[in-house]
Image (cartoon, rainbow, N blue to C red; front, side, top):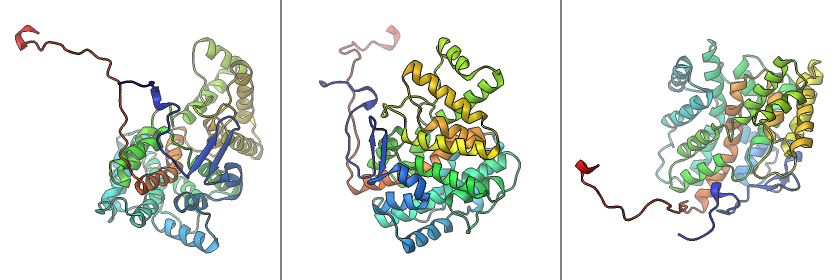
Length: 379
């Protein structure tokens, strides 16, 4: 088979999309025409979901109706709670637990086996159920594993604040709720990343939405995709425990051949615009708590890596210290990424269904040919 080999499909165009645009040289991210900076500062996660799924920003009445419908699907039935409890008792990892729970959710969705998997209206209802319940199952699992009871969702809180409430058992203050909502907006979509592509591949077979989202969760669980945010925080804690200057710690790590988490990106050649916004939030949280340690440590590492390696931080770098200062357990960072990115995954699944063609790339065979088949006794 002739043709240039593109390992990792780097630079290969496989589809057209109206969902998100990335300019890696300018450091720009756009959702359906709107700059991420404007959306992160002025739009709620619910508004961004509506934008991604429907193509336009909602007016006040549309947003109220959409938010109410989303909130109505948050609660979990006993069957799903039993699965979450069992996974917690078996000490399943958070991402594996989330993958299993998303798959199990289909058993309780009356439309899960709807004959026409491309029916947009039915899929929009599935989308609301999946997106509403993913934070709930994650919060339930997290509480069960630490021996706490399930906290039922609140109809009075928005998507972001309700997750924190279900996770911690108390309503978050405005600063925490707004920060977490912004983080969800920033992670909602990002072009044809690995997990989004896996969701599209699954959808292209005309498999159902639950299967496609489950595929995406499994893909995101890998350390080269979704696991970097947790690795950043573990690195920062190691630096703190060492009592070393952050730049010296990083210098020593690089000399040992170790990779510093949270830097570099397949698309961005400059600082990730989401990292800029989350860096500001990390700083603000530090100031509010009277402890700038994590933010200042992060800035020192960013400056050193930039000078020595010419690399800029990606979204994972500052999301780590932001989540940590919000009191979120480190191993929940990647599942939270999935909770947010579900909105983008579903938008791409809907887009795939609307103009579907089976995704089926080719591989160049480089093995042997014309071998003579030996008898069993001669092997």
